[in-house]
Length: 364
Ligand code: TRP
Image: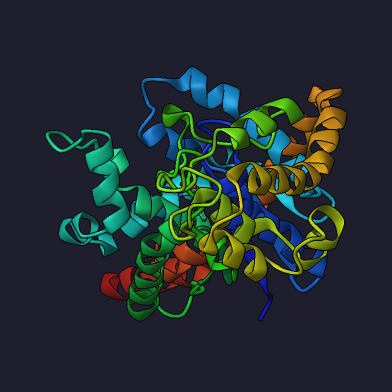
């Protein structure tokens, strides 16, 4: 069976290092591994509109920001199809058919939807579109017959929902859809990178994100202010590693060779942690080390962004072409789905013939 990747992001803001550690970096590695037959990367504007329906301009502006972030991390339009969700109307048709296969109570039990409803104060009146977005996400994934969905841990319930829809569809209408697998980052620290303030969630409204597009000075300043261990007041005090954002970022981004290059007094991250826990290692030192690592990681991303920013029409052209190619693939799946659901009336000559025969018999 062909190995196919589909994944995407909502265009509600620029992408940050949490997106990068949790998914983008892995996507580029998967892309360059050559192990996948097709890779689809989607800007999920229709999904973004399910909770930003009153702010279409925000979604519109962020299409380009996300596209620039994609290109700048190294997603390559020659290897991956980059496209915009709303331009593939077949996805909405699939969603409508899948709606028959999901109950309201099943959607209500989805933990991601549950917490998002709370976050957005939707409890009193949940927009139907928002409520159904897990079904629409199943359409995104199945339309491309994706086998692999590289996403962050928060998307696990969406994948579960998709698998259920696939199983139910195939059971009722016959083997048609492909059941996808989630692909999470191997590095535990990358699963859920905290904000610079130590809060579990990185979010624009909390102002605790390091963006891929941040310049060098901004990154330096954000790390300087990063949350560490509030009980580590004097350098000589013993410090805590757990819940210490600087160490979580070091877990996520440091490589053995960084020590020889930037901090030769320590052989490894374990040694650095040990010293910190014992006392005698200051926050300034670990923050400077992290800053060097982050700048090394982000410099090529920034440089590529600058290049793409010089030719914005070319970026739109990449998205237009990608959307066209993606649409053809989704149309093929939709036609399989319609056939399986027996709503391919005009494509099925046998049906017409049989019906005609039935009526000609009755006329004798
Ligand atoms: N829900 C994802 C997010 O919030 C975006 C998304 C939409 C997606 N459709 C998808 C991700 C399909 C993976 C597969 O970032």
